[in-house]
Structures are given as structure tokens and as C-alpha cells.
Image (cartoon, rainbow, N blue to C red; front, side):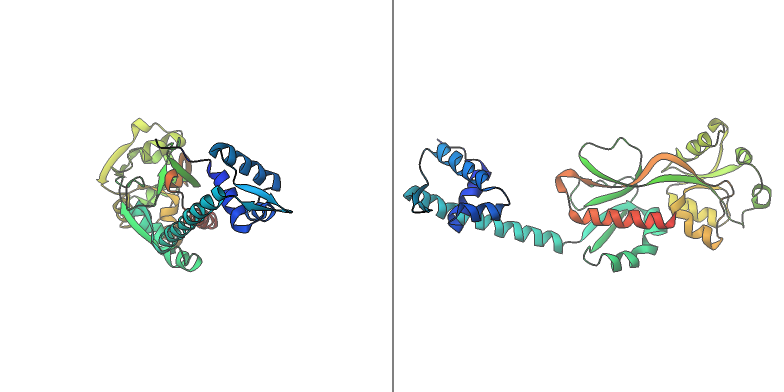
Length: 297
């Protein structure tokens, strides 16, 4: 009949006491009190039904049963320490694979990649682009950087980085530029707006935030991905809708203008990773991303 193992904490207390030949030293090693170790040893003896130590002078001496358990537990814990160290080293050596949309990768991440590599040289970041098909639950992806709205999936650890802000943008090369640049936002209801099928909610969300009738919007040329939509806007093909971080460099360079500003949506730019695969590198990356976004704001 297979017998259940004693509680792990009791075994750890015994292994440390037997190895260090002292309850006090075991308590110091385990960062607990002398009394806590003594209680764990007593509980272990009661679980096994045998004595493991006998008093010898002012110290302790292992019984025959204690010697057997010491040899077995020392070997087992040493093996566990070795394997855990190997696994930790393997994780540290492996690249951290981050998924994000192609538009976010091209327009925001790549221009900052040199700075990230300099600030976090041990991260060994590998970027994987996709559009709606990336899932950190699948093997090969450690985390996902995504614009999304709460509530968050229960099986995900989510680092919220910044609230999403979106707004209409156009190029000074756009044919309607002179007519629109001083016009109120309602003037866009008469325009055939550039849009993307990957984010169909963007224009209606902006219209509602701007107290405009979303049903009155008219759509012109559509694009499969946000990256192509913004390239079309830069080329002067019309007015597009964009998250602020993805057009910040274009606005500074004058390639695009945002006459109507940006409004906040319920979405967040967030870093997702499975709770079962918590990785300290994700915390570092999340803090770096948050600081970068704060500097840009």
C-alpha cells in the first residue's frame, strides 16, 4: 500500500536539523523560529510513528530511523536543489518571447528596441508579430502585449501599462487637409473615413466619446491591419483612427496631425502572461514599458 508523504515543511525542518545537527541552526537556515522547527519535528515523528532524535547531553543524536531518513532526505533535497537550479538557469538562458500586433511592433516597439536592450541586457527579448492569433497559453510564447478591455481572463496575470487613447489623424498631404484642420470633429461625419477590419470598434468608440452619432459615420477604404491603415494616412489617402502611442513619432515629425486630439477608451495597453508560468522577467519588462509610456505622455 502506498503511503502519503509527510508534510514538506516537516521534512525540510528534519533535513536541515539533521544536516546542521542543530535545531537552532536549522531555524536560522529556514528563517523560522526555534519553536517552529521543534513543532515540525514532533509532527513528523507522530506522522511516522517513530522517534528520529534522542537527547545526548545538550544536543541531539539521530536514532537508526533518523539516520535512514536523513540519508534519504538529504539525497532527495539535494537532487531537487540541483534540478531547480538547472531549470532556473535554463529559463534565464532562454529568450523571452513576446507577442504583439505588427503595427505595435513596427510603429512603437522597434524604434525603442535598442534602448530596451541597453536597459535590460539580460532579458534576451524575442518579438513575435501577429494579428489576433497570438495566445500566451500556447507553447512558444511567454507573454502578449495587447490593447484590450477588462475584465481580464482568470488564468492570466495582467500588468496594466497605460490607458488607451485614440483619435483621428491625417497627413498635411491629404486633399481635405485645408478644409478639415480648423473644422470641428463633426465635420468628419461627412468624410469617407479610412478604417481597419482588425479594429472595427475604433471609429464608433471615438464618435461616442466625442458626442457624435456613431451611426452617421461613413467609411471609405478599409485595410486588414492597423499598420497599413496608418501608412495610408501618412500617404495622404484620408483620415484614419489611431492609438496615440502608434502615431506619436509621426506627429512629432509632422507626417501626421491630430486636429481633434485623442480621447481615452475603456481599453488598456497591457502585458499578459499565464499565471502558471509566472516569470520575473515579465515584471521587469512591464516596468520598463510603463516607464517608457509615461515618458512619452
